[in-house]
Length: 382
Image 1 (tube, one colour):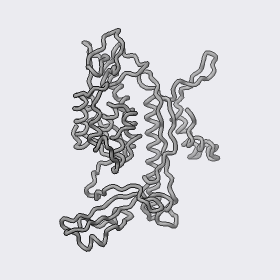
Image 2 (cartoon, one colour):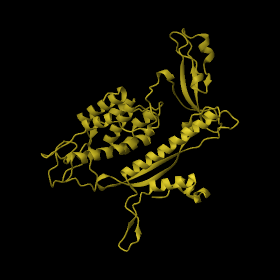
Image 3 (cartoon, one colour):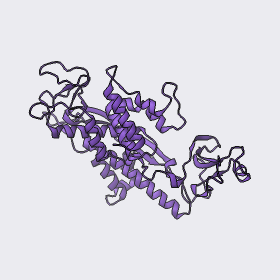
């Protein structure tokens, strides 16, 4: 694995020479995290490059540590601005610093290429003279009024007004049947509107919306997922390989068909050997490993806050269709961009339900699963 840029900067700092410094402590922390001691030697005693950089458990721990460091930096930045008497949305200043290519050892011996995502904050100094940094997009709230029988002078006079914080927004509606509305806009330094979406007042917002980078699939979601995945057991209660399309076990010695599966929906990859079957404990461990991969697919591709039930539904979808298909799906585009439109799938629901085929054929089982996932996403029904 190539040494990440941020780690090279720490180790090249003059402070790194001081073993009592914060820079040294931070560099050592990430060295131990990213290089967890898997050096190998050949028959002559020479060091050789290992086949993989870290295990899946170590990879997930490293990503969580990197995400936690970003959250800590955001909290510290918010505290500095609050102390300086200024308001700022730190999310506008989160930038992807680098994506680190990592070879990950998966359960049961396969190696997959993954990426650790390193985010950083590019914040202006909180004591700058200007109240609002002028070199970054800013988030504002804009009032809109419509002419008509129910429009009063107060509404008309506010049409187009811009508010720099939610606390400045007047109460709506102003009068019965008022057709006023507020949009939450992101404006470029040159005044262009980069994005706009309907604004929901604070008292109506879903209080359990969360930053997706800190989310995990709930126990309720995992149990739901287990109930939706097929399993085929032998007479001893062990999981055996089955054809995902027919749900029939694969006879011993027969070639594996496309879609060969074992446990709770684990699609068997080249190099994996489950001919002897696996125990229930192994099946659950394999499911959790696969869920972890699906969770990273969701966290890496969804860029807006969502609720726990929405997250669980998205993980179920990503687990079922694969991380690559999920990343390029119309579902992701609809969720991330409120202005997105598609001529093929006119709504998020239609894009979601379109994933109803296995090996080219429409599956009633997938139709039912998409329906249940959508109900979970929309209504929180597990």
